[in-house]
Picture (spheres, rainbow, N blue to C red):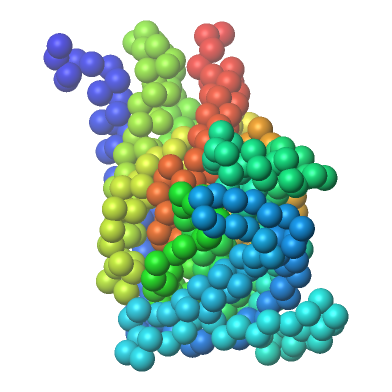
Length: 433
């Protein structure tokens, strides 16, 4: 097969050359995000990492395992156990490994529920970074996780027979982290507490006794700075800038009558649009590593997350290309499409939480068939799950598989927007009249 005579390859080559010739579009797509990373890197990167011990107040409402509940596993018993004590002990042991004196991440003060108003007053005055609340059934939630894992074990048959009043299903434990999302410290502390909690429960589920949560060593964090928090958002912002090049390219063929000439060559519609989609994906595949490397120059640790970031960026590019097709199908001129693309890309980045934590109220909380995940108001924007995934990769050191919900949501939204955009664009410009 001669690739030079392949219509798809020819159109793909034409699109890539067109992107290169559009210097202003190329600037906003590649260089503009790099300038953002450079500015934030100078301001917050390098040695500016936050390694100050943050004051954290904890309201521990945990009632432990009831005294009249006794369960046996081998020679061990569970009665009156407070798993919250181990949780708070390990949380207090978090240290910055890159600090010379093993500086603690949090200074924890444990109070009672009756002192909540005083804690809220301190939070309002920013004397503390956050208010963490452990529910009354915290220890029961840990024990239920053991019963779910070892459901066929004699330990749990004894537990069920002697523990009346509790259902067989798993108990949902909710930990509340309250703080000001506009502050730098809470933007760092919130994800750390969240990831620590996930790791605590995950390690607990792996224990073989079903009695103790035995975590060897300290769950350590790195000296994350605001730069670590901003980089994922800037990368997604850069990918959203490809919306401009996509809208410009799709309308340029229409304005120049080139699309009519292409149709006369009997090129299939899917061949033409596929070349546009792939050219935008290749642009993002080049763009994301460049932004990661630039961030590395200002202190970000480069790792395998670059590959995961490229995958997330390519999936997001399908959504941005779909929006570009949609704009091209709704406007009459290329300038209008470019202008609308800019008006959409920037607000989308901010609403997705690229640069700061945005209020994102729940619409469907704790949906069972979604693995207990919640759907929120701005989750319909494809950039929202993309930002969450990258932030989890960089701040939480988690994998794509551990972000399965957001990855599936991003993929679903990408093909939804792409399908909608293609439908409008083909109907307007590619259907034979």
